[in-house]
Image 1 (cartoon, helix red, strand yellow):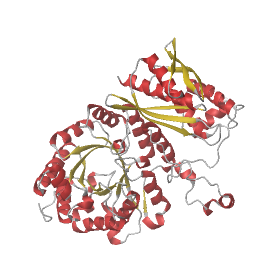
Image 2 (image 1 turned 180 degrees about the vertical axis):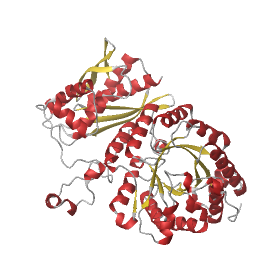
Image 3 (image 1 turned 120 degrees about the vertical axis):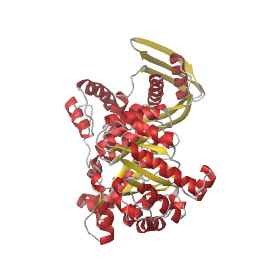
Image 4 (image 1 turned 135 degrees about the vertical axis):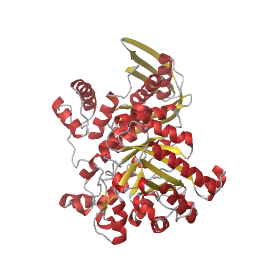
Length: 536
């Protein structure tokens, strides 16, 4: 199929897309119009992000993230790949039914059964979309697909045509576009637009591109495929060489008007373009990009923390925008400058991403009203019963610490208010050990009104505790990963435990928090077992 074929204009009238009309974006680029361009944010945390090795989300956790993404005001949520499993199909379907605002997108290979399954999953969405993809680079076509370019072209055309018959919004991705032969890339982009694609995504699937090269590729597509001016031109960059953000922003400068990204940069291998980085770069350097997004940036921190906690992927302290040190200053010179004028050492107002400039310091003398007020400021709207549970835990922590910080409060709430029913509750823990002494743990777990108590020894206090828990629950699982992270600074900091257990083929994440790291480790293990039992 050549570039001069007659376009199917009736399928691509921008007037059919009142919420996504964007052909003017490219006209602004061509005509030098100074009017800022809208950059669409397509979030793929629940699809590509969940493909991060070690990440595992159940349906309830995916729904919680999807609702937060809607609150963040992303333009599109790629909810999953429905053909991959019944669990993924059910999660995508639930999100399509319940989450309003963004487009809800389902991924599909350029295979008939994939497209049909994707269509079924998003049929109840307020704004449904099917995202069809196929490899177009020589190495993908010959090495993986074992198809000729003509066969790949036919598969792309027929799958986009089928997707278009199911829903209006269809995105096509020529996978590994950064390593594709440009003439073939132009042809397949033109052909899929003619079949009704409303968005064309140019993926740097393996993170191979560099900014200048990727920007040139985008410019060349706009120049050689005129029909691309009538659709959203998207980019999807991976971070294998650490250039996903740079490549995405270079492509925006070159004329792309949609960025596919994930919260905290999660994704295959080294991850994807971090949403928080590109959004804040466009916002902070609007003088350079002359563009904007509709993202509610004040929800960035809350979204980052939610995704980190549910996936078990800890955000590095020096991570741009969302790391805990992103707006922290230790140097005396910096502190002096900040106190006199924030702009001396901060190019962003931390409040713009949801970071409070000052903390309300809570102590054991603080009452329930103060606790509720601070939790409300942190984004938690709790019932009276939930506040009471949080307050009881807060008093225990406050008795051990001079000050209770925001991160302590978040850990308390997330630990006390789990997402799944608590089959077992850690009632008490007793540890004996020391140099030359075989560690011994006594564990008390409550199940309903009944208290179970067991004693075990182990290679260490955590091992002994886990053995005692295994004895009570009768559950046999494999511990895959174990992490302890200090929630705040100081010797009296709360310790947050994140673990991964394996039950058959299923990876389950457990979370626990306490000023006692052994107790937080036991809580995380019980939390993971509760999730496993709930899932069954």
